[in-house]
Length: 195
Image (tube, helix red, strand yellow):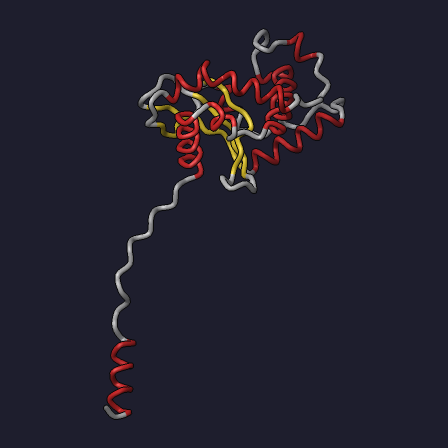
């Protein structure tokens, strides 16, 4: 074969259409990912479910929620006023929050997930919807502990939000707040409520 034939052979090979490739999978939304992984964890075990949470963040978020409940997020009479009034902005310890979140597993988490088939949904209750909204500025008399909680919580919400879920194989609805994280999952849950 001469040089001219070799050049034509190489040129014709270069002009061939590329080999077909498999179609790209559509990207999974963050909401779909959180709900799917939540469902899988709950169906696996209580420990797998608990591992989805950042309990330092849960402790901070819950104390800040209590302050805002007293400031009017909840209608009068709904907040545990006596308990919440004594809080000074010190976050709940992670061990307490891990125990509380774990206690929700048999109370409403398993009931909601049931046998699975979960999909994201809009939060049903006003309180659950408020979990995903930024916290208004604190009153001028707020101490530095609350100011730190406010900064942290609004930072987490800026990188996440609230997701409710309902499941074909379960009953009811629940809402979780998630935030982006540098872990392998890419997010952590920072609170959960029966919705």
